[in-house]
Image (cartoon, rainbow, N blue to C red):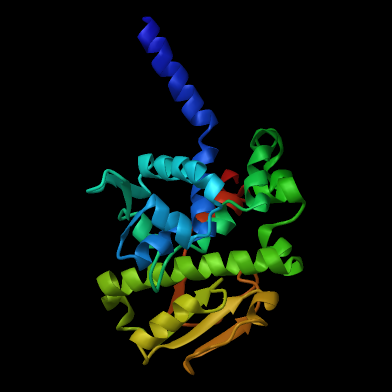
Length: 267
């Protein structure tokens, strides 16, 4: 193996070890409001514009430039040279999911929150435990599920619900636009684990003939408010019973697949 091959391999290893830096840089950009700042300026902005609009301390502008360069390399922002030679940053297609009326920016503070990220420190322990005892990574790390944590921690509950709402809204708008015909023959629908009903209310507005029900845990339903008279909320547990309807909407997402695994597939 040549020295060049060894250097490439070392670089690849370091890239994996420092992969979390990209996630934290994205969180930083969203927290500072950088995507929105660029969006407000028509989709492109210089580093000076971004620093001014996001109130970055003048002494930290060189550090902001490093963050912007990292996120440009990873495909969040575009980076070109302006007429005066200054770098001009723009929104890539991926970044456009973080701006505008219906965007996914609320997912960022949830998916990189300390409670969620710290769960992954338990992966090696999780593999050594019996399935029934291990539960999910979140349960192993924190002693209860993310849903139980949300019922006791108002801050985490807000971050979780905002994230799921943003995900559901965009998901349903795309589904209705592309596959709306699947709803036309329904007269009733139950959204299982539907949170505050963001997705269901999109369906109700698009198909007012469908009687929509949202089923979720009591602490979630207690804070839900329907903006559509055709959306009704039911407090309960989907593992106990589900209201009768023509169809059930169960959106299996990262919340289920990554943190809610209970080992059922091993039986």
